[in-house]
Length: 115
Image (tube, rainbow, N blue to C red; front, side):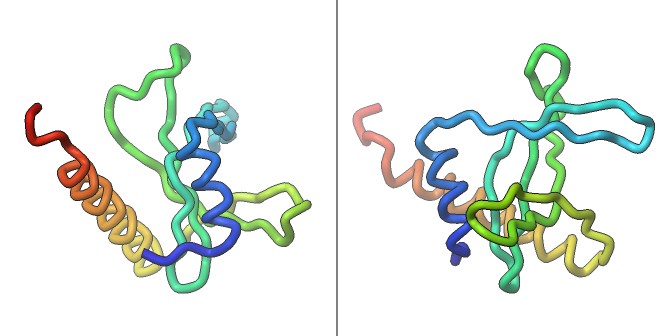
């Protein structure tokens, strides 16, 4: 899997156990805090995968949200954008599935055979 420079920088922070959250305002005006799972690069565009959290900081349903991750420069604040095209959304979902498969495979290889 190939990641852009911006995605690599964000993912390095996440891998180093830096807890990154984003607050999303829903159409009904409610705010939801989401944990950032990963920033993916798909067809040269970056996308963020968010895990919505309840008021206790938990996620009980396992649903994730995908948004465009737009950062014009290293010094600018990132912006999130909606993914309106079904094919684009499907490509991001497939890339996330591939990422999950890679992580599971890496965990199998890294597992101690004596466990």
